[in-house]
Amino acid sequence: MKGNFPIDKFQQIRTPFYYYDTDLLRETLRAINNEASKHEGFVVHYAIKANANRKVLNVICQAGLGADCVSGGEIERSIEAGFPSQKIVYAGVGKSDWEINLGLDCNIFCFNVESIPELEVINELAEKKGKIAQVAFRINPNVGAHTHANITTGLAENKFGIAMQDMEEVIEKASKMKNIKFVGLHFHIGSQILDMTDFIALCNRINDLQNQLELHHIKVENINVGGGLGIDYNHPNRKPIPDFKDYFDTYAQHLNLRPGQKLHFELGRAVVGQMGSLITKTLYVKQGTAKQFAIVDAGMTDLIRPALYQAYHKIENISSEEPCETYDVVGPICESSDVFAKAIDINKCHRGDFIAIRSAGAYGEIMASQYNCRKLPTGYITEDFK
Ligand SMILES: *Cc1c(COP(=O)(O)O)cnc(C)c1O
Image 1 (cartoon, rainbow, N blue to C red):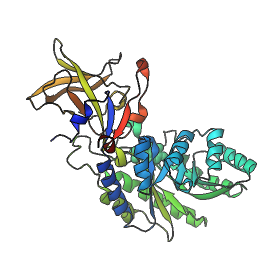
Image 2: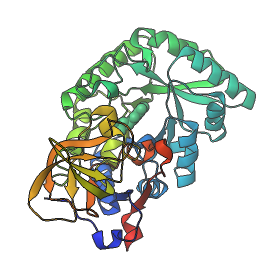
Image 3: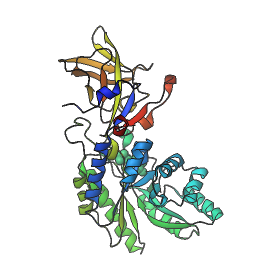
Image 4: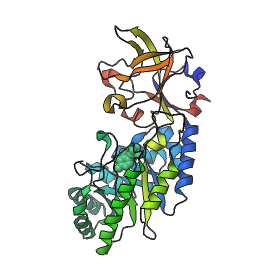
């Protein structure tokens, strides 16, 4: 089964481009709101870094989600898109002064702080402005996620967060700072996680930490468990909306929330991954000595995940119904790693055929580069073709 695309409307547009199915996006957002609202105190943020296309952000913002930012640029972009600053959280190991000042000026909900030196700088900058910065501490829970090594973030060896054994000292320090208000704990163990036992491990760890803090009479208003829920890259059409029921139920069942406590989520990939496809045109079909290449006009500059993480994306020839043949689908960039897939079977390719590279809504357009002086790809939404 292939995806549904308004191919006749694609003819006039310069390829490659991203196509975002906003009907699917809205359905996905409805599922998120529907499942999260079944649990008291659950608050969902969208991780802007997955896809910061303005049209996409508008749809997500209208659904009422908050924004999870990892840079000053993302704070600017999310405010521009209409996210209320009181729903913005800001994480990152290396926040620069202008970014912290921007967060303070915008009165964002919370800085997710990753070190004591950072906490000191936020306190100092907040004092200059006569403001109180709300902070949560990002704790490294030393919980592994069964995902690609480059996208696991919650192990002691990773650069992210504050070590568990330093947690109390840091909270103590914060409580003595005049321009800091401690409001919560933050975690994020990695990305593309499909095994709920990874999230259960995080819940268990948080339960232990909370018990420990209660012994010291430290109250935590907000727990933020980050994002990381994965999508089915192998079958983008089979169940395009991730199992949010299972995801939120897992946290409801395993995390012991205290009365009045809020539980925050920061979902990126699971919100936007399946609604996006990279649409590219076949330039040439080339017979190599041992293989057959479909050379397309999109490259690793448009979608870097296959080159960077050896990520799999389903590829469909959406212009042809002829019997399948085996191709290496490659881009035009002068790098051997500029390969979308090797030895895949797709409908027979001809010059000019549209190829859809599926499940590319997350970490696609936003990671595009201009290497080889390439134009950045444009993102179109369903409404653009009506
Ligand atoms: C990347 C990131 C997320 C989103 O991750 P997904 O796997 O796309 O859900 C959430 N929180 C933080 C802190 C992140 O760095």
